[in-house]
Amino acid sequence: MIHLTQFHSPLGTLLAMAQPEGIVRLDFLDEKLDEDGLRTKALKCASQDEISLQRIPLLDDLGRQLAAFFSGKRRHFDVPLCLHGTTFQRQVWDALLTIPYGSTISYGQLAVKVGRTSAGQSRAVANANARNPIAIIVPCHRVIGSDDSLTGYAGGIWRKQALLVLEGARLL
Image 1: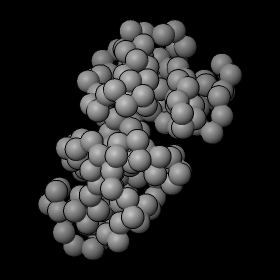
Image 2 (image 1 turned 90 degrees about the vertical axis):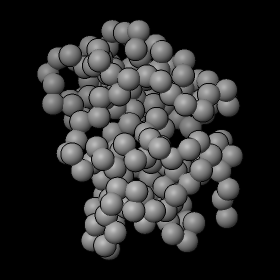
Image 3 (image 1 turned 135 degrees about the horizontal axis):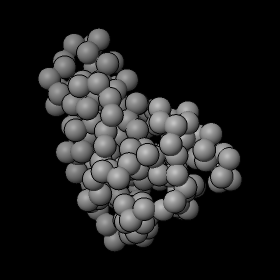
């Protein structure tokens, strides 16, 4: 069963999906959705037919942690995660979890972290980064171009910049 809800944030609405054992997705939305919209979005993101809008304690805890993060009172999240992807994608997402709050690394540095140093492998790392299903908590926003440019972010470059500013990251 997938449980889902929305949270308001200073950067817009966040759609959260969870299974009882952990958070499955956290995505920025450009608008708040009604119940039908939530169900439709969930069916596009999850392969499960059983979807519940009933809040579970895990989602309530996530909401509290997100509120604390956006108010500058939390730097780390401790909600359990259920990262579903290929072995390689999970390896990249695990590496993202090691990037300290307020820090950035380049896509090339991320590739080195996971032992992929050729240009083709670096592109594969960037693609895995782009498929990160859990925004903010798995901090793909901390990965930038080798020239310090803010490239690629599913939630929009303006959100990536705002998250890095919130964290106090050095930006050019």
